[in-house]
Each structure stands twice: as C-alpha cells, then as structure tokens.
Length: 257
View 1 (cartoon, helix red, strand yellow):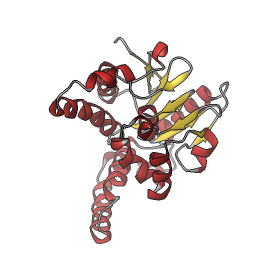
View 2: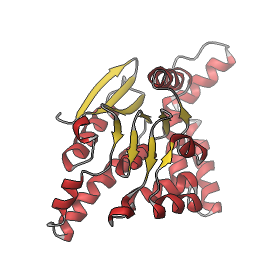
View 3: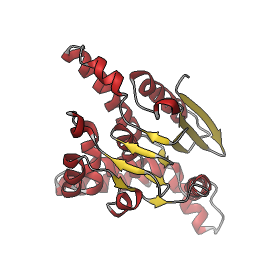
View 4: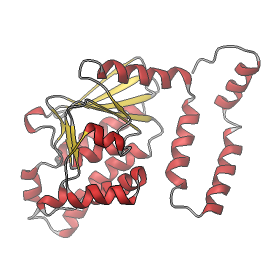
C-alpha cells in the first residue's frame, strides 16, 4: 500500500494513515486503500478491535484540495461515484462488526474530523484541534452530518457544521465527540489498555449485535424500535457466546473471550 500501513498486535489491528507530507489528506487512492485495509482487518479472525491512527503531526487534514480542484472537471456522475467512495468508507466503519478506535494525535479537520467521528471511540491528545470546516471553502460536510448529528444532536451539530469553527480537544470532549483525552506520552498505552479490556472482557457477538442495534434504532418509531430490541434480545440468547457466558457465570469459571 502507498498510503496505509497495517499491523496487528494482541488481537488489535492498527491501520495507520501514512501520508504525513500531505498531513494525511484524503484522496481517492487513500480512501480506497483504507477500505481495502478495513476489509482485511474485518476478515482477520485474530483481530477483535481496530485502531485508526496516523503518521506525522496531523491525524488527517481532510480532503486533498488539489484533488478537490481536479474534481471540478468531473461530471455529476463521476463526482457522485467519488462521493460514494467516501460514503462507503464511513459506512464500513460505522456498521462494522468490530469496534473501531480513533487515536488522534494531531489535528483532525473536515474529512479528518469525519473519519474520527464515525469511529466507536475517540482518544485524543490535548493539543489536537478539531473542525468541520467545509463551508469555509464553499464545500458541504454532507456525509459526516449524519453521524455527527446522531452523536451530539442537531443543536451542537449545526453549531459546528454551519460555522466551520475549529475547537480544542477539550471542547470536542465536552460536546461528546471525543471519549478520552490523553497526553502524547500516554495515548498509545491508553488506547492499547482500553482495547485489551474490550478484547478480554466482552463477547465479540455481543459487541457486533449491540453496534448493529444502536445503528438501527435511531430514528425509528418507538414501537418499531421496541419490537426490534425484543427480537434482538431473543436472538442474542441463542448465540454461542451467550451460552458460554451464562455457563461460565453459573459455574464461576473465568470467561475467555
């Protein structure tokens, strides 16, 4: 791969953006390589948690502006196909059976903020800045708007998407975008320990089913949502992980997930 590095360690798959000279800006090739690597990690049965991180000073500066400029020569159909490339990336992460953690050690702007937003958890260094700045250059933060609004609500989402303002890591955490703020020296270890806690103490089936449920119930009618939760509850009882968990609990044996 030209722009992505992939390694594994103790059931964690590390996907690293590797375009530091361009602040890991997104172009078609990088997005395609990200999707390919995510598929690789998802199909790796030894991997339970996936971490997205980056080389260099920035996590991701958003879309490569030179690439955006070239898109102005594209037809609508060509631009739609390119937009769907990014949409599919976000969808893959959000709907993945595995848990995604964004390890943000530098600024995450525009598409970079979007990439972190769709992950299940975000760890950030305190120095990182965060912003959905598309409207400042006449662009639209279209795809990420779905996920940001789900995460923090319409009022705060509009505040960020319509003003294009840059916020600090602490402000992002206060808005419930970030989960954890860790120092540069400790973030690698903090992410590793958090991931290992998920790996050793939670069921892969339960993580997958819960992620799917949370993605589906938002926006549903309350009656339909309750029906889905009841069906999910019933189906989950028949999984091998549930049988294993109940048996281990009743026999007071340690569960090895």
